[in-house]
Image (cartoon, rainbow, N blue to C red; front, side, top):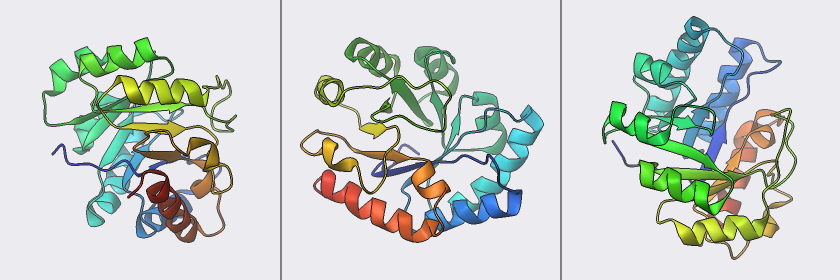
Length: 211
């Protein structure tokens, strides 16, 4: 399975949306060119998480885009998603790799070079590094400098994506850094036109990554 492209990495946030509108926004992002999609649900029960993941996975499969489940290997396996993303307080990357084998995508959050190296050595396939800017999707935001992002990109041979408050107007700070792509949440999720927003962000991400 390990064929994936993190150029435009869209992370969902269902807060405040009815399910039908949430799924519409997910599909619009896929129509607009999201290259990989992470379903992130912090407040749902396991059953609720699985139910929405099944519906999202049907959409991502239609557009041949990998679905990554945030935090939960059990939910990932239950719906047959393509991968999981793990943060510092989740299961260790090496443990997850032992459980999942080589066929599934494992992403990791990293904020320092040692953290990034540990994740890479544990078997991570890509890293999300940030927050570059303050973000509304998490209560507590720890900012990561572009210097640290650059150092992480140079330290590991796997794709590194910038994350945190990124939108079409503020990505210039990433220019010249060897990122593989950008992660966005609110820029697409809260847009009046998520398809067009995704198209714009994909073009920006391609330009930043010299594609």
